[in-house]
Image (cartoon, rainbow, N blue to C red):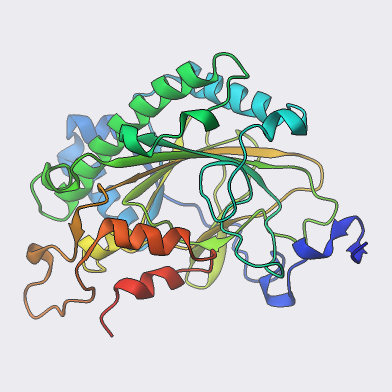
Length: 335
């Protein structure tokens, strides 16, 4: 029996600096909210587009409202995901995440016996293109899970596509720039379930990391804050807005924009009383696409900050490294 701190097993207890409490949480800042309806209309003399540019440049994170995905579909996806996590353990373990794997039910990004664990259970599934799917890992219970996830994923994919058009516009690029480059974009989904924790001051729900994607779309429980974003050395909580989706830029976009837009570290903290659920979609270029700073963004004496590499190489590097801030991006940097 390993030492426990108030029923928290040792493997979850973080070292001092890594604990979530403390002075470096900035509770009053708010990440920007972007109205996708306004972006579509191009209204307000491009005001919303300018807001998006600032959000990408200064935060790398924003919440999207009027995104066009039906609230009922969001609620249904959340309900079914929660239902899955409430199943008996032996039922969930029919969809096991292989050691070092990234699909299935379990803990991802665990590579050693002494590595600290996140206070989180996850179900991760490859959605698109078809060859990344592992149908054996898609739950058959709840019965509507697969069908709902298909519909949800199609809607989120279309949203990613639209957002990337607008993000291209904020950089002075043609709207179709990213879609033209990304080929058959890779899409994966991960449901994170954070049970209540007796000592939320000692554990992390999810270690600090940036995403390897181009963009990530996150749906979080209404009324349960847990996601925090690093800005100027302080952690800013992302307060849920009903039916809004949280969008963040990933490492792939940082490379393509030559660092003008940066992927941002984020983490999840736990709660003593309440569980929390998030549904996260990662959207990234096809594995055979070569990434590197876009020529338009390496001009006027700007140095080229990242080397060229195939996205699949980076993806392999990312999924075989533990979550540790933005360390994985060192792979792409030109020193």
